[in-house]
Image (cartoon, rainbow, N blue to C red; front, side, top):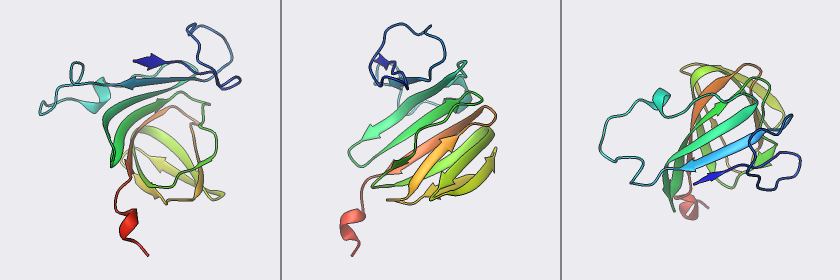
Amino acid sequence: MTLLATKESGTLQSDPLLSKRIILIILQMGLSEFNMAKVFSIFEIIEYVPNSVVMKTIIKKKTGNVSVVSFDSGEALTEKISPFDTFIQVIDGIAEIVIDDISNVLVTGQSIIIPAHARNTIKANVRFKMISTIIKSGYEDES
């Protein structure tokens, strides 16, 4: 399933050639597309797309998600607050991760945990790829 959403309108579009917009492509990989217990290269399942952020969900469960994301140079996600911890690992390029107004520059091989309830945004001053792991379980045990 592929969805295209423009930054300006937030609505779904079927024309990927509209200029001057961020396209978010979400490919939810079902068992028919992604074989479990098979070796794969993370670099081969995600590509850079001009003027776009591309996200492919590798695993989606009630307890969390693992996605691989590519950002073209100059693209960014809008600031958000997640109720869950998010582990980010840069696998290609250089990313800027802003957490509660503190900028962190990560290069290939570096990681950071975005704490639950922290304001954050992800920026691509140069293009990069990352793995994002969101953990949704275990919060009920904390007091």
